[in-house]
Image (cartoon, rainbow, N blue to C red; front, side, top):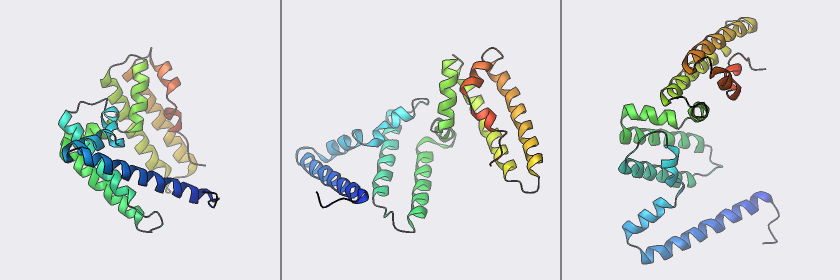
Length: 211
């Protein structure tokens, strides 16, 4: 409408139109589909249907993929109900995410939940893409990822250590970087390591202090 000139008002108007269109479509589909068929349709056409793509690097059964997609869809529906202006929304999102993770762990079990956490971590995806390009085995991807997580965790603790001077922390970070580089060189092999280092910028970032 011409009366809407504010960008936020236009965005909210479009979102309202989209919700109304979606609701009208759902109403028509419910009239011709059984409840089971409508649930299947909604699941396959929701963002949660991308669960198999996101988990391409781990094996999940059809039943597990369906339950994960349903949990994801339920979370998305709940998030749409949040009022962004409400001061309690941040805490509610955190609680919702916690419940989501607990449900995923129930679906997969503790051991495979650890696999889920790894394959959904962007750091692992980055690592796996590099090791795929270098034709290294999956076990190498996992080992490199674990080495990165541990090194970054230790580096983060050092950066916030106020008991040490900036020079002392910088020296300690350089040690972590050097040790991590030696470990990675052994994991990927001396021949592949120069290419690995070229594609992976996080190794140099280990030694940096925040400005």
